[in-house]
Image (cartoon, rainbow over all chains, first blue to last red; front, side):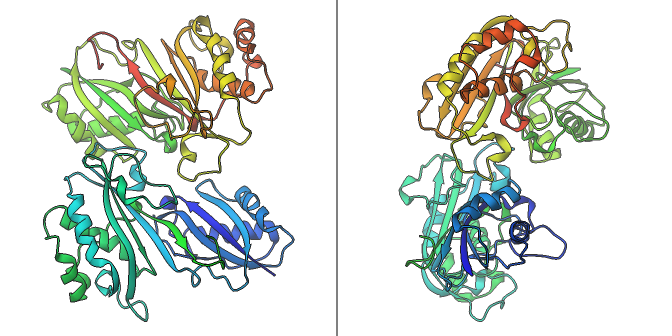
Length: 270
Length: 270
């Protein structure tokens, strides 16, 4: 038995999210079907983050345990040959049997891209939220800093309570204006690269875990600050109130992507 | 009666090309339906280049004649409000009644993008031809120079003879290796920007007109040179032979895009 770890990128536009569903195509289902086609075995593929319908991934991590003669590094080309073009296996490798893509993760990083102050674009529209009104990215960044650290984030959770606890630790959060197209890279975007006249606003957020729809609710709330509707110091009040209704709307899915997953030590991928 | 000129960008992936067809969605049909929704009138929209199924456009130009109170520049937002996100109207303006997007064009510029020496990418795959074998972009560029000038290009025309004459004049052609994603811009790519280690190979070609599938046949032929299968000086022989069977295969549509259209004088858009 081997534990195979995959690094994945996918365009979530045409999928009903990561998780297998009875009547809709999902990324998990595509991967499990590809593994079945190659090995004849039905295995469960687990991922670091169960991305929602329409959400993308640049550096998703997944693993599965299988008895197979396929060498670990050969799963990459083998799976790719069975997958549609909108799911790409960047790497395959063997990991410790204890490695679990979900539970071994120390932190995950998401990116949300807003197209702002710009004519529409038929190519990038699949990967961002278009907002015509100019937003104050500096105010959004400042407001977001109140989220850093360990808090009960139930105010940003849809359908609360879904989990045993809604306490999470946000390790890093930034909002920047960029002129170049920032997405599709599994590398974090440096906070020094902001440009005052850029057409894109990019939120990056890293935490030890996320609640359901949390990044999209944070984005929707920060946009209200960027519009000038809410003050820069509103975030602390919203977190303290602990009510979803006090925060802003949930941003649409297509602007969101899982950037990368951090496993710390040597158990999984770097 | 006014003659309205549009500059358009579109993602051709989900369209059966520009031209109206009985049972498939096309760009022309979407535009004519949007105009009908706004004005109640059935008009014909004509474009500079009838792009094929799956082919994109960054700076397509089209025009239509209509009796309407909508100010020329207001057609841009009005049409956009009726169009799907994969078709974008960049600009609308009034032009001389004599202006005809097809016949007034002095030249058109196309771009073909090959993804080479690179891991797959689920986002860019819709917009390029992926070739794993490293290609010699310098040899492709050198070979392409034999196409410059006025020639009978029937060797690159599918279903010849489609037109009264297959003589065309190629005004500019270049093949370059680039590291950054080169597509989606309606600006020509400067020939000085080549990088020896880039992951993309970009063909740009400008001519007074193109035959059916001509750019894709030229690309497929240049790729055979890039692979080292054919010598750099093969293009002259192929043009002189004048037989489609002597040239290379037709490259797939998704790597191709109409970049911009040149109308010279003051009749149409710059």
